[in-house]
Length: 237
Image (cartoon, rainbow, N blue to C red; front, side):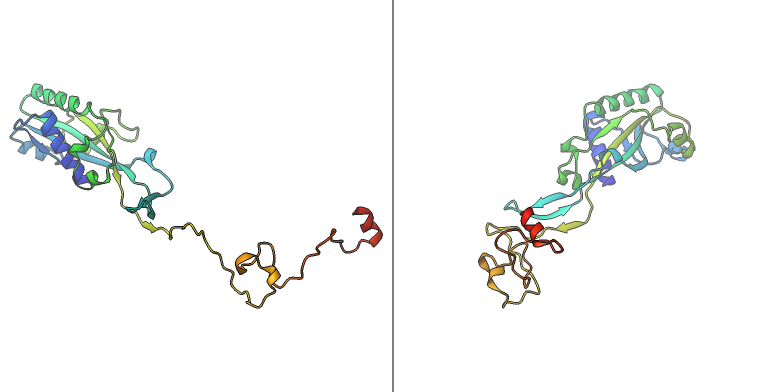
């Protein structure tokens, strides 16, 4: 999944931003040792943070259908994870680096999500949008100065690109058999076939509310409560 996002970004930048220029696209950590080995104009996309996008988490299950439109399975909705990239340009002159960053920023601002035609692999198959944001203020628990300090390099102009990528890997729950036009037939266990027929409804199935083997209910008048005299019972009827 992450490598597919890398490839989509590489194709997007080469096609829409760099316009075929001989500029390398790298995903290495921009450490001091790496910077010392750069001998050609390079755009670096360093993936420095991965965390779940809790705002996009959904509950419930999604249905899967066969060719007849019948539900055959259910699975959890995709969970989105934020991939944070630190984008920097490396040339011999700061003016050229600023020009590259300007071109990359203009390219990214055209889209709210990775273009569908640039997606590859499983990202293209699931048919779900891959949202992205660029140059937003960093979260309170993280600053770019801390990132550069961890890399051991000097602070450099950069763009912060965050891509929320869906991950569809989840358990699959098979659906039960479909209900036909004849409906569902319910059965009751522990019922002897020789029970009285008046406790059964049509089709020899037990009638709801009647316990097989129980004495029949009175057919007329109200049932008298025990402990009440017949005179009081008659007055209350």
